[in-house]
Structure formats: structure tokens, C-alpha cells
Length: 303
Image 1 (cartoon, rainbow, N blue to C red):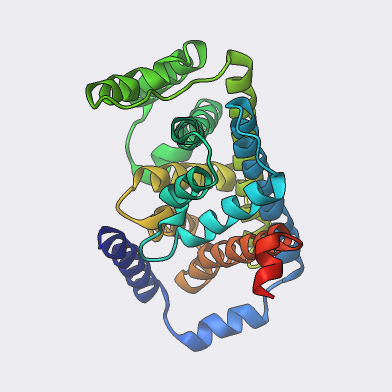
Image 2 (image 1 turned 90 degrees about the vertical axis):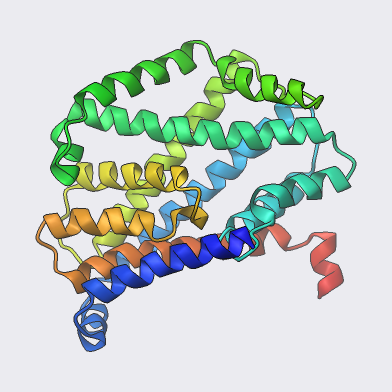
């Protein structure tokens, strides 16, 4: 029920944004006809590579925790979980992966460790990129929000450096809570393994944001790549933290559209630019699921 409510909230936010931005359906359709669709193909390639790198990061984490699983099975579980994060119930996103691997006989504590580290490293990587863009061009986020980020950026940068230098702190609090509940502790990685996963997520986020850039080029001749990539990563970070909606649905688009409006982009074009990447990402994920399932025993039994 909670997941259904979350989905409805995200869909409601998205519907409200569309209603306030779109002047008429005819105008939106006219924009699609005049769009430069060759850039969409380049965009979806970036989203495919992004998804594959995220899969490799989780596969590496499983390997580091001595969970030896056939890569094709890991791939199918991973990409199905990504698609199902939009569905009411969303069991496959986190719990589904845990249940699937535990049912195959793998240690629940180790599987839980990989899922926890995947989420926390992804968030820290996103925060790291946000801080990098902020220090490179401080006006990027203050212009969008009319808030000075100087003090917050110092605080966040300090936290980020602390977690990079002392990565074991990431498991201290959850392990303390688990010990109170008499549960097995989350198993951490070697420092070199942690940094490798951090690099994977940094790279995947950059490719993801560049995919958005090329999606924007479908409707815009030459968007500022630095500004656009920075805003997308910022919106993705907020989407990560907005746990009340699945995959930041509506939150990410709202921030992106606010940026586009500030750049003087009219509502119908802004909506098209914000929604196209979401559709391309879902298409890339379905394609990846098809590749992962092809040739597996589960696929053969269904067909």
C-alpha cells in the first residue's frame, strides 16, 4: 500500500507539472514533428552504457562478497529490478533482488550488504559530482534556487571527504542498529574495492547526464552541456533522497523543468525535453532485460 501511495504521489506531481507547462496538445505534437530525432539515438546509447556500468558495479559487489552467480542471471535480476521500480508495490527494486538471491541459497547478510552499498555509494557519487560542479561554477545551483550554498557545500564536501578517507564509517550506524536487533552485520569491502565501485558509479552518472544532454539536443540546437549535466545530476541527487516517490518520479522532472524555464525555454519544449529521457531510459532498460533473459532457462521455459 505504501508503494502504491508513493507511485500515486509521483504521478500526481508529474501530472501537475505537465498541466501547468503544456499550453495545448497540438503544440506538443508540432514540437515532436520538428524535432531532430537523430540525437535520441545517441542519447539511448549513453543510457544503455550507463545501465550496463551500474550492472557491472553490482556484479562486482557480489563477487567481492563471494557470491558467485552467473552474470546473465545477475543481469536479468538487476534490470528487472530497475524497470519494476515504477510499478506499484515495487518489490523487485530492493526486496525482490534480496528474495531472489536468498531463494537461490545465497547468504542473506552478504546480499543485503551489496544492496546497501549500491545505494549509499550511488548517493555519495551523485553528491560528489554535485560538489565538483559547484566548486567549478558556484553559480550553477544558486541561480536555480536563489539560495547560497557556500556553507552547505563546505559541510557536504567535508562529509564526502570523510567517507572517502574512512569508508568503514558507512557501515558503523547500520551495524549498530542491526546489533541491537540481534541481526547479522553488513559486510564492508576492501578500500580498493570500495574506490572501484565509487568510480563505476561516478562514470555511470556522468554517462547518464550526458544522455540527458543529447536528449535535450532533440529539441534545442546547442544547450550548455556543463550547466545541463550539473542540473541533471543535482536533480538525480534530490530524486535519490525523495524516498516518497519511486525513482524520483516527478521530482527530477520538476527540477529540470525549473532550470529550463529559467533559461527561457517555453513550457511545451521543456516538458518534451524532461520526459523524453525518461522514456528513452525505460526503453533502454527493457532492451537490456531482453538481452539478459535471452538464452536463460527461465526465458526458454516461458517461450
